[in-house]
Length: 79
Image 1 (spheres, rainbow, N blue to C red):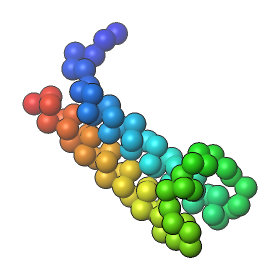
Image 2 (image 1 turned 90 degrees about the vertical axis):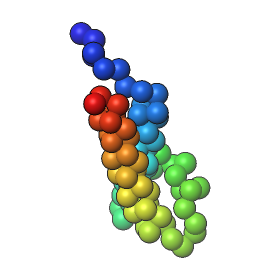
Image 3 (image 1 turned 90 degrees about the horizontal axis):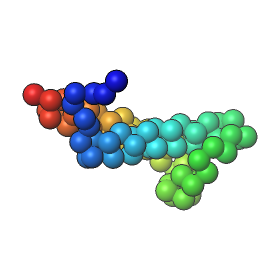
């Protein structure tokens, strides 16, 4: 089955970026709280030392915002 409305490349990129930000921020928070989960370890280079929890929360919030913007782009393209 094929979709009648293909996603634009920008919407696909925002979806991927949103996924990486939310998953990376969430895994960083779990690592800070539990100490043993090292999934997506590269995100530790994106937050400054001493502000890890705040940085990971910002990453999750930014991922949700980017996802909402991508969804908005997809809905706008359909109408």
